[in-house]
Amino acid sequence: MLVVKNYLDQKERKTMWESNKPSVKWFRLFRKRHPEIVFRKPQLLGKQRALITRKDILDWFDGFTSKIKLIDPTIFLEPERIYNCDESGFSLNALSGRILTYMSNNFVYQVGSEAKTLITALVCCSATGHYTWPMLIYPGTQFRGFRPWEVFENSFIGRSESGWINQDLFYEWVKQVFVPQTAHVKKPLLLLLDGHVSHQSVKTSALCDENGIQLHCLPPHSFHILQPLGVGVFKTMKCEWKKAVKRQNETEIVTNRTFAITFKDAYETTIARPLAEKAFRACGLYF
Image (cartoon, rainbow, N blue to C red):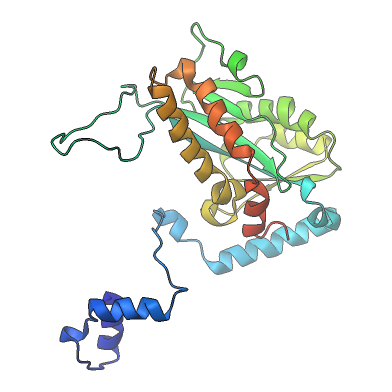
């Protein structure tokens, strides 16, 4: 209603409302007249992501389509040849939503790990919904008494000091997972990804060239607009992750040892849905 008030003030229009601020009744009737207008909860948008403009996106699309058409224009007609990969961090302390309790209970708790650990998952899918094995990246230099690959067989396990991806890990994932699991796909194929330094190395570029894989970087700060995984997959996966953590919390907390089996639950539930196809279309990367 403040938007209406500000508009009226700017136009120097006087109304019967006090200080030009519409009444609650007016707002209720306005919504009744315009059922197409609904409430939506806004998503937090970082300052940098808010800086990307329509012109930035259109300029990127012009360059992108021109380059791919020179290589092989039929790629845009065959969605099974268009892939997207990206990473996201999953917290071991994913809090559940509100719970029912007695009014007298002013404080409610959820058991969790005291360590603020994030484990990175690299996910990759095509515009037809074909998912390659994900890569799980654990922080530290070695596994102590547990083997995550034994409980999540269809995954690639890596480690880094920080728990985030680096050039060596990305190269190994491309070599050991992406290349063999897309061997059946007509070449060249397109792999869209962000321009993070971990994705850009001479050896990875050479490996992709040898195997008919065209790497193409999305524009900076466009995760929420042009990244299919960001637009249509990770949100659902994070919701499923919270549910899986809640189920796990009924018996024990989620730790590095139990992360893989818990994440497997959330991951397999997510990829069983037709999210990827819709996300690629929403991003304008496949028509």
